[in-house]
Amino acid sequence: MIESEKSLLKNPTSGIRKFVSVNDVQDINALVQKALGYKADPFKNKHLGAGKRIGCLFLNPSMRTRLSTQIAAQNLGMDAIVFNVGQEGWALEFEEGAVMDGTSVEHVKDAAPVLGKFFDILAVRTFPSLKNRDDDYRELHMEQFIKYAGIPVVSLESATLHPLQSLADLITIKETLFNSPSIDKVKIVLSWAPHVKPLPQCVANSFAQWINAWGEANFVITHPPGYELDEQFTKGAIINTNQDDALKSADFVYVKNWSSYKDYGEILPNDENWMLTTTKLSVTNNAKVMHCLPVRRNVELSDEILDSKNSIVTQQAGNRVWAAQAMLDTLLT
Ligand code: CP
Image (cartoon, rainbow, N blue to C red; front, side, top):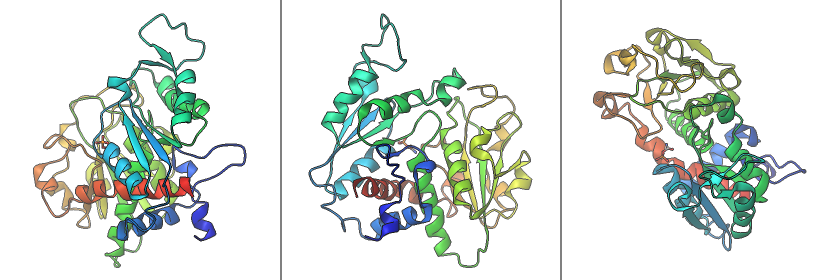
Protein backbone atom coordinates (compact mmCIF):
# COMPACT_ATOMS: atom_id res chain seq x y z
CA MET A 1 0.00 0.00 0.00
CA ILE A 2 1.40 3.40 -0.96
CA GLU A 3 1.84 6.13 1.63
CA SER A 4 -0.84 8.46 0.20
CA GLU A 5 -3.44 5.69 0.56
CA LYS A 6 -2.45 5.04 4.15
CA SER A 7 -3.14 8.62 5.12
CA LEU A 8 -6.47 9.15 3.37
CA LEU A 9 -8.14 9.92 6.65
CA LYS A 10 -6.43 12.39 8.94
CA ASN A 11 -4.79 10.80 11.91
CA PRO A 12 -3.95 13.51 14.40
CA THR A 13 -1.42 12.26 16.89
CA SER A 14 -3.67 13.48 19.70
CA GLY A 15 -6.63 11.29 18.97
CA ILE A 16 -8.50 8.39 17.51
CA ARG A 17 -9.46 8.55 13.89
CA LYS A 18 -13.02 9.34 12.83
CA PHE A 19 -15.06 9.87 9.69
CA VAL A 20 -17.80 12.42 10.28
CA SER A 21 -17.17 14.99 7.51
CA VAL A 22 -14.94 15.76 4.54
CA ASN A 23 -12.61 17.48 7.01
CA ASP A 24 -11.55 13.98 8.12
CA VAL A 25 -10.34 13.14 4.61
CA GLN A 26 -6.74 13.88 3.64
CA ASP A 27 -7.03 13.20 -0.11
CA ILE A 28 -10.51 13.11 -1.66
CA ASN A 29 -9.44 11.91 -5.12
CA ALA A 30 -7.33 9.10 -3.63
CA LEU A 31 -10.28 7.97 -1.50
CA VAL A 32 -12.54 7.94 -4.59
CA GLN A 33 -9.89 5.91 -6.46
CA LYS A 34 -9.74 3.47 -3.58
CA ALA A 35 -13.53 3.05 -3.74
CA LEU A 36 -13.45 2.48 -7.49
CA GLY A 37 -10.71 -0.10 -6.93
CA TYR A 38 -13.10 -1.98 -4.64
CA LYS A 39 -15.91 -1.66 -7.16
CA ALA A 40 -13.68 -3.39 -9.71
CA ASP A 41 -12.52 -6.07 -7.25
CA PRO A 42 -14.71 -6.20 -4.09
CA PHE A 43 -12.87 -9.04 -2.36
CA LYS A 44 -9.27 -8.06 -3.02
CA ASN A 45 -8.73 -7.38 0.69
CA LYS A 46 -11.17 -9.93 2.06
CA HIS A 47 -9.05 -10.58 5.17
CA LEU A 48 -8.24 -6.96 6.06
CA GLY A 49 -10.94 -6.80 8.73
CA ALA A 50 -10.62 -10.39 9.98
CA GLY A 51 -11.14 -10.55 13.74
CA LYS A 52 -12.57 -6.99 13.80
CA ARG A 53 -16.13 -5.95 14.49
CA ILE A 54 -18.11 -2.82 13.58
CA GLY A 55 -21.19 -1.78 15.55
CA CYS A 56 -23.79 0.07 13.49
CA LEU A 57 -26.14 2.07 15.72
CA PHE A 58 -29.32 3.42 14.16
CA LEU A 59 -31.37 5.99 16.00
CA ASN A 60 -33.47 6.36 12.82
CA PRO A 61 -34.68 4.22 9.88
CA SER A 62 -32.41 3.34 6.96
CA MET A 63 -32.15 0.94 4.04
CA ARG A 64 -29.14 1.94 1.89
CA THR A 65 -26.83 3.10 4.66
CA ARG A 66 -27.51 0.10 6.84
CA LEU A 67 -27.11 -2.55 4.13
CA SER A 68 -24.19 -0.96 2.29
CA THR A 69 -22.19 -0.62 5.51
CA GLN A 70 -22.79 -4.26 6.41
CA ILE A 71 -21.87 -5.46 2.91
CA ALA A 72 -18.73 -3.31 2.88
CA ALA A 73 -17.64 -4.73 6.24
CA GLN A 74 -18.31 -8.29 5.08
CA ASN A 75 -16.30 -7.72 1.89
CA LEU A 76 -13.33 -6.91 4.14
CA GLY A 77 -13.87 -9.97 6.34
CA MET A 78 -15.21 -7.86 9.20
CA ASP A 79 -18.22 -8.66 11.39
CA ALA A 80 -21.00 -6.09 11.43
CA ILE A 81 -23.65 -5.93 14.13
CA VAL A 82 -26.61 -3.61 13.65
CA PHE A 83 -28.45 -2.23 16.67
CA ASN A 84 -31.62 -0.17 16.21
CA VAL A 85 -31.24 2.01 19.28
CA GLY A 86 -34.35 3.99 18.44
CA GLN A 87 -36.62 0.91 18.57
CA GLU A 88 -34.75 -1.74 20.60
CA GLY A 89 -32.38 0.03 22.95
CA TRP A 90 -32.67 2.12 26.08
CA ALA A 91 -33.57 5.74 25.39
CA LEU A 92 -30.28 7.65 25.56
CA GLU A 93 -29.55 10.97 27.27
CA PHE A 94 -26.92 13.18 25.60
CA GLU A 95 -26.84 16.39 27.65
CA GLU A 96 -24.04 16.73 30.20
CA GLY A 97 -25.29 17.16 33.75
CA ALA A 98 -28.84 16.09 32.89
CA VAL A 99 -31.13 15.14 35.78
CA MET A 100 -32.49 11.96 34.27
CA ASP A 101 -35.94 11.95 35.78
CA GLY A 102 -37.71 11.91 32.37
CA THR A 103 -37.93 9.32 29.57
CA SER A 104 -34.21 8.72 28.92
CA VAL A 105 -32.87 5.65 30.74
CA GLU A 106 -29.12 5.65 30.06
CA HIS A 107 -26.56 8.40 29.52
CA VAL A 108 -24.34 8.22 26.44
CA LYS A 109 -21.30 8.64 28.71
CA ASP A 110 -22.18 5.26 30.26
CA ALA A 111 -23.34 3.49 27.07
CA ALA A 112 -20.62 4.63 24.62
CA PRO A 113 -17.62 3.26 26.59
CA VAL A 114 -19.37 -0.13 26.77
CA LEU A 115 -19.81 -0.06 22.98
CA GLY A 116 -16.13 0.80 22.80
CA LYS A 117 -15.38 -2.49 24.57
CA PHE A 118 -17.64 -4.51 22.24
CA PHE A 119 -16.49 -3.07 18.89
CA ASP A 120 -13.40 -1.92 17.00
CA ILE A 121 -15.30 0.76 15.05
CA LEU A 122 -18.57 2.42 16.00
CA ALA A 123 -20.87 3.73 13.24
CA VAL A 124 -23.78 5.96 14.25
CA ARG A 125 -26.88 7.23 12.43
CA THR A 126 -28.79 10.07 14.00
CA PHE A 127 -31.09 12.81 12.66
CA PRO A 128 -31.69 16.43 13.71
CA SER A 129 -34.69 17.45 15.79
CA LEU A 130 -35.41 20.28 13.30
CA LYS A 131 -36.74 22.17 16.32
CA ASN A 132 -33.63 23.78 17.81
CA ARG A 133 -31.02 24.82 15.24
CA ASP A 134 -28.24 25.50 17.73
CA ASP A 135 -28.63 22.07 19.30
CA ASP A 136 -28.68 20.31 15.95
CA TYR A 137 -25.75 22.24 14.50
CA ARG A 138 -23.49 21.53 17.48
CA GLU A 139 -23.85 17.81 16.59
CA LEU A 140 -24.33 16.83 20.21
CA HIS A 141 -25.15 13.15 19.56
CA MET A 142 -22.19 12.44 17.27
CA GLU A 143 -19.79 14.48 19.39
CA GLN A 144 -20.79 12.62 22.54
CA PHE A 145 -20.17 9.23 20.89
CA ILE A 146 -16.76 10.49 19.69
CA LYS A 147 -15.96 11.77 23.17
CA TYR A 148 -16.92 8.66 25.11
CA ALA A 149 -16.60 5.59 22.81
CA GLY A 150 -12.79 5.42 22.85
CA ILE A 151 -12.73 3.86 19.35
CA PRO A 152 -13.03 5.34 15.83
CA VAL A 153 -16.51 6.72 15.15
CA VAL A 154 -18.08 6.84 11.69
CA SER A 155 -21.09 8.96 10.74
CA LEU A 156 -23.86 7.08 8.97
CA GLU A 157 -25.63 10.49 8.81
CA SER A 158 -25.71 13.06 11.55
CA ALA A 159 -27.79 16.12 12.40
CA THR A 160 -26.07 18.23 9.74
CA LEU A 161 -24.03 15.95 7.42
CA HIS A 162 -24.09 12.64 5.50
CA PRO A 163 -20.45 12.03 4.52
CA LEU A 164 -20.71 8.47 3.16
CA GLN A 165 -23.58 9.58 0.93
CA SER A 166 -21.45 12.45 -0.37
CA LEU A 167 -18.48 10.17 -1.00
CA ALA A 168 -20.76 7.85 -3.01
CA ASP A 169 -22.09 10.90 -4.89
CA LEU A 170 -18.58 11.97 -5.85
CA ILE A 171 -17.63 8.41 -6.86
CA THR A 172 -20.69 8.42 -9.15
CA ILE A 173 -19.80 11.78 -10.67
CA LYS A 174 -16.17 10.81 -11.25
CA GLU A 175 -16.90 7.43 -12.81
CA THR A 176 -19.47 9.07 -15.10
CA LEU A 177 -16.90 11.70 -16.10
CA PHE A 178 -14.40 8.98 -17.06
CA ASN A 179 -16.88 8.06 -19.81
CA SER A 180 -17.42 11.69 -20.88
CA PRO A 181 -13.99 12.95 -21.98
CA SER A 182 -15.56 15.91 -23.82
CA ILE A 183 -16.53 17.57 -20.52
CA ASP A 184 -13.78 20.01 -19.62
CA LYS A 185 -14.92 21.79 -16.43
CA VAL A 186 -17.89 19.88 -15.06
CA LYS A 187 -20.97 21.89 -14.04
CA ILE A 188 -22.85 20.45 -11.07
CA VAL A 189 -26.16 21.94 -9.89
CA LEU A 190 -27.71 21.14 -6.53
CA SER A 191 -31.41 21.84 -7.05
CA TRP A 192 -33.91 22.16 -4.22
CA ALA A 193 -37.09 20.08 -4.67
CA PRO A 194 -40.53 20.17 -3.02
CA HIS A 195 -41.54 17.68 -0.32
CA VAL A 196 -44.54 17.09 1.90
CA LYS A 197 -42.53 16.85 5.14
CA PRO A 198 -39.79 19.00 6.65
CA LEU A 199 -36.50 17.20 5.92
CA PRO A 200 -32.99 17.76 7.34
CA GLN A 201 -30.37 19.83 5.52
CA CYS A 202 -27.77 17.05 5.98
CA VAL A 203 -27.53 15.68 2.43
CA ALA A 204 -27.44 19.12 0.84
CA ASN A 205 -24.96 20.51 3.41
CA SER A 206 -22.72 17.50 2.98
CA PHE A 207 -22.84 17.44 -0.82
CA ALA A 208 -21.98 21.15 -0.89
CA GLN A 209 -19.15 20.64 1.57
CA TRP A 210 -17.62 17.77 -0.46
CA ILE A 211 -17.98 19.40 -3.88
CA ASN A 212 -16.47 22.63 -2.57
CA ALA A 213 -13.60 20.73 -0.92
CA TRP A 214 -13.04 18.70 -4.11
CA GLY A 215 -12.76 22.00 -6.00
CA GLU A 216 -12.87 20.63 -9.54
CA ALA A 217 -16.42 21.66 -10.53
CA ASN A 218 -18.37 24.74 -11.52
CA PHE A 219 -20.80 24.32 -8.61
CA VAL A 220 -24.20 26.04 -8.45
CA ILE A 221 -26.89 25.71 -5.77
CA THR A 222 -30.43 26.70 -6.70
CA HIS A 223 -33.38 27.02 -4.34
CA PRO A 224 -36.34 29.30 -3.71
CA PRO A 225 -35.63 32.33 -1.51
CA GLY A 226 -35.72 31.31 2.16
CA TYR A 227 -33.98 27.96 1.69
CA GLU A 228 -30.41 29.27 2.01
CA LEU A 229 -28.12 26.68 3.60
CA ASP A 230 -25.50 27.34 6.25
CA GLU A 231 -22.64 29.26 4.61
CA GLN A 232 -20.02 27.14 6.36
CA PHE A 233 -20.94 24.39 3.85
CA THR A 234 -21.91 26.39 0.75
CA LYS A 235 -19.07 28.94 0.68
CA GLY A 236 -17.42 28.63 -2.75
CA ALA A 237 -20.62 27.71 -4.61
CA ILE A 238 -22.69 30.08 -6.76
CA ILE A 239 -26.16 30.55 -5.27
CA ASN A 240 -28.91 31.27 -7.80
CA THR A 241 -32.59 31.47 -6.87
CA ASN A 242 -33.61 31.27 -10.57
CA GLN A 243 -33.76 27.52 -11.23
CA ASP A 244 -34.10 27.77 -15.04
CA ASP A 245 -31.03 29.97 -15.20
CA ALA A 246 -29.03 27.78 -12.80
CA LEU A 247 -29.74 24.61 -14.80
CA LYS A 248 -28.30 25.97 -18.08
CA SER A 249 -25.50 23.71 -19.41
CA ALA A 250 -25.43 21.57 -16.26
CA ASP A 251 -23.72 18.17 -16.57
CA PHE A 252 -25.16 16.86 -13.30
CA VAL A 253 -28.30 17.93 -11.43
CA TYR A 254 -28.49 16.72 -7.84
CA VAL A 255 -32.11 16.97 -6.72
CA LYS A 256 -32.86 17.17 -3.01
CA ASN A 257 -35.37 18.67 -0.64
CA TRP A 258 -34.39 20.38 2.57
CA SER A 259 -36.37 22.42 5.06
CA SER A 260 -35.47 26.02 5.80
CA TYR A 261 -32.27 26.70 7.74
CA LYS A 262 -33.25 30.33 8.40
CA ASP A 263 -36.82 29.59 9.57
CA TYR A 264 -35.44 26.44 11.06
CA GLY A 265 -37.23 23.23 10.05
CA GLU A 266 -40.05 25.07 8.26
CA ILE A 267 -41.55 24.32 4.84
CA LEU A 268 -42.16 27.60 3.03
CA PRO A 269 -45.23 27.92 0.74
CA ASN A 270 -45.58 28.19 -3.07
CA ASP A 271 -42.75 26.05 -4.32
CA GLU A 272 -44.38 23.01 -6.06
CA ASN A 273 -43.18 24.13 -9.50
CA TRP A 274 -39.58 23.46 -8.45
CA MET A 275 -39.98 19.73 -9.22
CA LEU A 276 -37.53 18.82 -12.00
CA THR A 277 -39.22 17.84 -15.28
CA THR A 278 -37.97 16.89 -18.74
CA THR A 279 -38.81 20.39 -19.94
CA LYS A 280 -36.66 21.95 -17.22
CA LEU A 281 -33.86 19.49 -18.00
CA SER A 282 -33.83 20.46 -21.69
CA VAL A 283 -31.60 23.51 -21.00
CA THR A 284 -28.87 21.31 -19.47
CA ASN A 285 -26.02 19.48 -21.18
CA ASN A 286 -28.19 16.33 -21.24
CA ALA A 287 -27.49 16.25 -17.50
CA LYS A 288 -27.35 13.15 -15.38
CA VAL A 289 -29.85 13.39 -12.54
CA MET A 290 -28.94 12.35 -9.01
CA HIS A 291 -30.85 11.86 -5.77
CA CYS A 292 -29.74 10.13 -2.57
CA LEU A 293 -33.03 8.14 -2.24
CA PRO A 294 -35.58 7.48 -0.88
CA VAL A 295 -37.44 9.80 -3.27
CA ARG A 296 -41.10 10.81 -3.37
CA ARG A 297 -42.09 10.28 -7.00
CA ASN A 298 -43.98 13.12 -8.67
CA VAL A 299 -43.40 15.32 -5.64
CA GLU A 300 -39.60 15.65 -5.53
CA LEU A 301 -38.84 14.15 -8.94
CA SER A 302 -41.12 13.25 -11.84
CA ASP A 303 -41.59 9.69 -13.13
CA GLU A 304 -40.45 10.88 -16.55
CA ILE A 305 -37.04 11.83 -15.13
CA LEU A 306 -36.60 8.92 -12.73
CA ASP A 307 -37.49 6.38 -15.42
CA SER A 308 -35.32 8.02 -18.08
CA LYS A 309 -31.71 7.34 -19.11
CA ASN A 310 -30.70 10.60 -17.47
CA SER A 311 -31.36 9.19 -14.02
CA ILE A 312 -28.33 7.63 -12.31
CA VAL A 313 -29.92 7.22 -8.87
CA THR A 314 -29.54 3.42 -8.79
CA GLN A 315 -25.86 3.59 -9.79
CA GLN A 316 -25.43 6.25 -7.10
CA ALA A 317 -27.05 4.12 -4.38
CA GLY A 318 -25.02 1.08 -5.48
CA ASN A 319 -21.86 3.11 -4.94
CA ARG A 320 -22.70 3.41 -1.25
CA VAL A 321 -21.01 0.00 -0.77
CA TRP A 322 -17.71 1.15 -2.29
CA ALA A 323 -17.76 4.41 -0.36
CA ALA A 324 -18.20 2.50 2.90
CA GLN A 325 -15.58 -0.08 1.94
CA ALA A 326 -12.97 2.57 1.08
CA MET A 327 -13.63 4.36 4.36
CA LEU A 328 -13.43 1.14 6.42
CA ASP A 329 -10.26 0.06 4.63
CA THR A 330 -8.67 3.38 5.56
CA LEU A 331 -9.71 3.16 9.20
CA LEU A 332 -8.47 -0.44 9.42
CA THR A 333 -5.15 0.10 7.69
N1 CP B 1 -29.60 7.76 1.20
C1 CP B 1 -29.76 7.15 2.39
O1 CP B 1 -29.12 7.48 3.40
O2 CP B 1 -30.64 6.12 2.37
P1 CP B 1 -31.20 5.36 3.66
O3 CP B 1 -31.97 6.37 4.48
O4 CP B 1 -32.06 4.25 3.13
O5 CP B 1 -30.02 4.84 4.44
